[in-house]
Length: 344
Image (cartoon, rainbow, N blue to C red; front, side, top):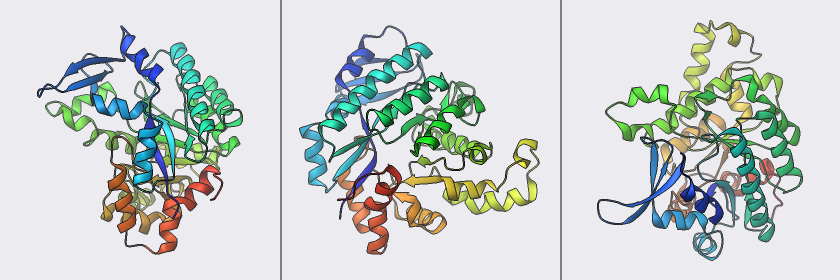
């Protein structure tokens, strides 16, 4: 059975060197951990950042023999590549310039091995009109399959209509936007005082993106752009679990004047405009929850490589207690339909 993995991260060597050379944040800072192993810290500020083992950086940059060998060993036929981290923390002019360079590099990777790689554009949403034009260029000229955005821009989430030119372009082009987590904005970091680890992938990533996805569902963007397609990783950032209660409480309690203008219950937009992937969530119970609530047509396979293991992801897919037909949907059929991939 063909297997397509939809949230697989990469960096170019040029991007790594650029991050290492920067004097201002964000930047990569080399060091060693408590055991003396080489690490690099992707620092967004003096306090906030992520520690990356040296071998992880090497795997991000490897879009050749090493990555392909890992894919082959675990039966993964194609990866949908997307830029690790994002451009939201950068100054607007710099971010726009860098996005074009990264997307051109990704376009070359995909063109060099189109059977094994597809790609999502890296956008600079600080300038939404420019980002919309870049998305169109990436789809029409480079053959990329959509774009990835990262949760918020300086604390501003994408429910703000100023960002909607990006969504207008995505709907017009018929491509999805993959919303990916990042650390909560500074004003929300106070809630994690004393527990800084909670702000990252342990909790804060999902909590922040789940909230921002709900704000998007309540914003009216899907009334204006009913064909807009949104992808969420980690089996939907807990939204499938909460969907019944969202729908139930909406009918009883919603009082916000903006939300009263919606044509549908927000839960309906989640069912009709959102797809979820298995990235970084290799657990049967949440998968079966999403399957029950959204249906097999709304779930797609992803690993979150190299942050997660291809082996573990592939084994999880193999062991799922689903019909062969539903496994085929998760494994490749949904991806082929959503992304316009050629079946094999």
